[in-house]
Image (cartoon, rainbow, N blue to C red; front, top):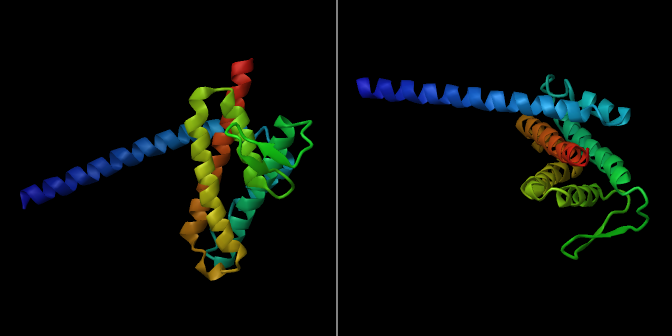
Length: 187
């Protein structure tokens, strides 16, 4: 019985230490990301504000709306960053370093973000893993958004909405940190 108590206490201690470590890491990440978010346009910042409070009501319709807001947020950031990093780009097709051609016309926010990420990671070789992770997150978010777009509001849970918001935040924070890394390496 003593051994079981000891194992339980040890497990709880480890949970608390890991939780504290994760919380500290996320707090530092959040501080850096929040500074990076401040460089975005007012239009995008208003979308970030729209997410606040969407989940507090425990209304399934708001969960679906949170996913829609995340998608629109990604779309707006994609447009803003693509225009910034590809100012004179007139083609609707972008050729990646690997030779793959992707459509960067209107509404192709994932492709535009991919082009921006490739450009930013190209300038810093140690950032390619981060770029790959962002592409993975974009796919994950797209799956949630696809579910929302099909009108299956009842299937969108509060946990889905929370994950989408957190992953969108991390994804955008990572993209913006790539952008600030580029500025740091130039300056």
